[in-house]
Length: 402
Image (cartoon, rainbow, N blue to C red):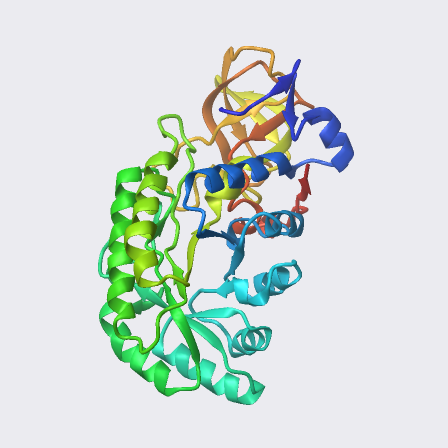
């Protein structure tokens, strides 16, 4: 794994030997996030992307409060997908108008809270627009809104397709002009548009094409507005490598395309608009590890099993049960034997009473035993909060920012 550093046998996490970190945390399993790697990732994006393109952190990727607080000081805005995430964002120094609230099925209470806070509500349906209008009348504040557009194109190669075709996300592009006219007839502060076509994409050429089509789309939509849009959220979808054959995203190519789009198309048309790129996994994913301890070693009919005290209830994605069609292993290592070469093939399984609790399938590792610490990499995004922590009633893991 790129960026992996060890001190003798111990993996270093945030510069701390993993055994010492486990003692400091007090128990296993746990998630650890490297503060310096978060900062470096944002710095890389700043150096590659246009300077007048805002970076918005999608809290859904990792809502740990310390992570959000740290990132709030180095990104421009925050994207939330629930009332709880909105409250977390409002606890940071970021201005409420630099918080956007997306997602289908927002409750009336969430809409009321968002209106009172002054965050940008990204409208997902005509009915939601009606609810916003009703709640705004009760709160007595003019709501700030944008229209989330379900694009009339699809993005191939994404881990999850969130635009194109029938979707629960956003308003179909062909229906947006009529909705804009309705919104402008109401007492709503319509700022612009949000387009998010897909997530976890490692193909720069596909993302480049999607960004060009997204700009075409928002410029068409803008022609319907009676005012010049001041908010353009171009989405994100930048992926990170999880599996052996995955190649890192060519960020330089994407940056070059965005420089061209911003300079030649967006700024001439919308000189004062906030243009956002919304990223979650790409910022936090590679900065996190999941640390779990071997509690049993057994051989069953010729197969060696390392049983750990964690499992799929903490890291569902690594078990292959979070959208994978064909199960593949996340990067995995024995964090207390980094100075040894792999010499045995094992099954790394969790402590749950189900065969689905598989963290490493036929992985080659150094000889390991009870007490060793096993680490799953790429664990900074969609780990703990995307997992069924209550399954079989085991204790929840701790999280630390190092």
